[in-house]
View 1 (tube, rainbow, N blue to C red):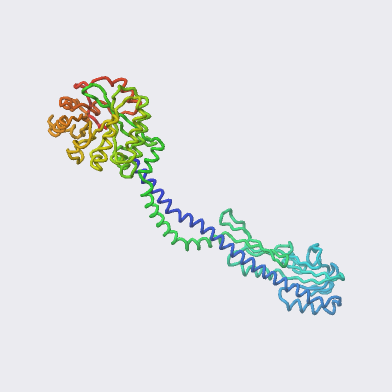
View 2: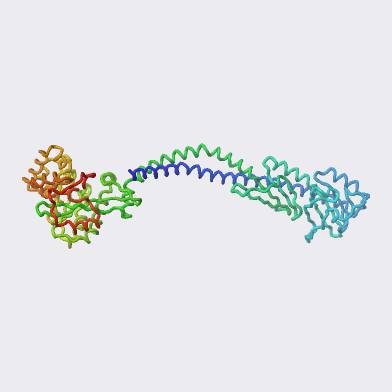
Length: 535
């Protein structure tokens, strides 16, 4: 069944999507969590480096404060003390005294001290402040290794300076960042960059982390930390392995819940609802022949369902599912609307019978009489006789209330017929209890005519019973001239089946009426074996 296969395919697709959802979300969330974890590590490393740089700066300014006691003294008297202080205190490359831009005494340069610009290998920054610091690429004594220069200008034009060796900072950076491959850098007052770690171009990827920059609130120091992609991938893998068991459990649970939900929600009822909304249903009409009038005297309306891809859903399948899932009433109401639209284009003789099947659920529904009367009003100008075809099960349930409804509709000119008589479990007493006008003999009894060598005692008994009860008889499923002649000889009033006419859509049945409506059926009419049961 194509529709059932489509159901299964859609269900499996939704279940698989439900199972994959936790895994996909897990990948996304673990990637976000990995970035967050590494960002926190970045912040921690940056703050550690910044704290160390501030500590070194504190030492430098403490040294400068210590050296103020030597201000104004000849270099020959203090040079040895400067050398001792520069050696005893950590981090320092050199310290000394200034007079303007000239170095007047140094712990590292002997008698020839030169200028501050020469020592820094660049002009001093213009800050407008009495004290300043700046990172430089190197100093005259160690040109290939960075340093940080600290200067305090005194009011009398003299000054004090100290230089911290950048190697201490690079060693510290390596100690805190090497294990993770961090790229670390530090700048003082916008000077030269003191960096450590690999300097490789990162690929374009979500897992490439942005550089984190931190700035000191006490000194003009900024540090930057950049995490390599490999560290982000490592953090992501660790997070995934932790999350993976939980994701697997969530996947299984969600698949089970989705399967249960689909059993409730993805159903025939949903398909029928959508088919009604999209007008996939149509009505075919099978003409009925009257032996009395020797022409077409009515037609039975048969609901058909064609999918958008051209495939057709068998009526016995979708009607049984509509009954099982509570959709038979709206489906019958839709049938009445479609019939009312089609019949506006019909031009038939007054008294033409238009039959439609009524389900037990609709017959017992509170809106049943209102639905039928509304349909009758819409085709009132066509002067047709509405025939309600009921199954035997319709009469068994809530029989007294059903009988009242049928009598009411009969009082308004409608007819009542029992469809497929002999296939249910209806007691013969129901033929006397309920107000019936017609009895439709099931095709199984009609086909027995040929199988029993032209003798069908059960069929004959049913026909004789109907005559005694003054019920008109309709033989359905008539497919051969032999069947037609047998029924005609026994006074069966109405004939329906492929021998007379197939079910047709509205356009084709109108063409058929124009050609055959007033023509009798010749008993000797040739025919081919039927391939399908008639409606």
